[in-house]
Image 1 (tube, rainbow, N blue to C red):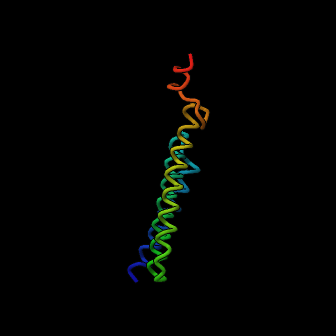
Image 2: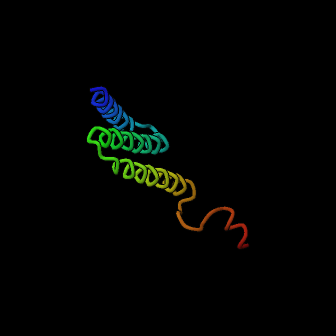
Image 3: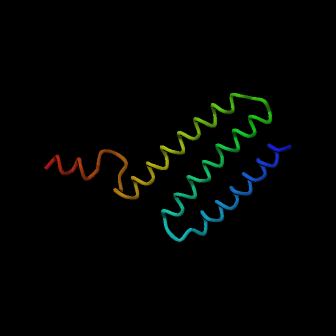
Length: 96
């Protein structure tokens, strides 16, 4: 019963994060909202895995957390430098 309440609370938090995602005034607010939604998704996967007594859901949640982290860093790097690859201020200075 307690974990069912936790699942409902995480789901409500996810809905509130979606409201922030669509209403965020800046790009960085939206990126943080997407990252927060991913974190809540990891929590939800872990809770559902615990309720259904399937420990392999924890592996799925950890993999999703890693993808969420790397994706957030890639998005922030892209919006800062307008490139994902080797184009960064440090590399451009070394080539000249």
